[in-house]
Length: 384
Image (cartoon, rainbow, N blue to C red; front, side, top):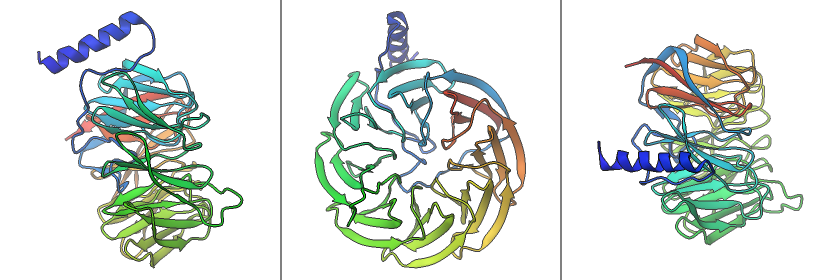
């Protein structure tokens, strides 16, 4: 048995014997190419993974994390699941068994997804004075805490900086190691304090996010200066996704936009007919998005042409994840659904205990979901 596994088992045993809260691992987490250390898998929020998990699925475990779960997603790194709840608790679970490794209370509520970087997990918090926390899980304590007003989005970690917006309309870059503010940007003319609930995406020196004022912003990651803004038809609470030289984002009015990353020019738009709350999935030339109208649509990334539409008969608040040729989507009707990415046909659907408001995660030969009745669940399918 390796030294690393022995250390891990010893930490788990100590935690169980103590019978109290605590989150401390014996080693830093190292993400593989099919792990998800950040919301929607990558900094571009392109939530497609080169794994094959074919339906039908069978539930293999579930774990109660004692409180509801926000709109971000689970994280999966190094066979560890990390998830925050609306009571401000951060949990680490064994991805194979579902057993708790540890948990820690950070205050407030965790509504977006944290981001994992080696020995540090960076956690967004709302309802507390200090709302961005760098938690060192080797030391088992917070390394830094920063007061940024309530955060209801998932932070972006890029080039040793953490980028995130708050509900008052301020977007901030902080140093990954210290939590100190590097720069901040306030939404212009924001007398009504419209907020930023859109999780930012990054590419090169570009940091892109939407806001409740109905605009898409691209800031220079180094300085915080505006590179361009784009006026949409309504509030943007969904995070954008970036592929190559294009930004894709949806609005609460139900319009999907493709905008040039360099200059912010409109490339195409598509009216879906219902609100969009999550970043689109970009996969194999398609732009896939779920709507509150209960429909999953696939658009051509280049032209915006409708490739197919799949009615799942239930509102969708969360993002979609791709496991090669299969898309997995959760609904507010308490269903996990598998859809053929090429044809838009439902391959399988299974009932779950609660509504799914968070983006599913795939990896470790499984599909993982979180439900609003405080459960994390793992499903196994056919793996090739």
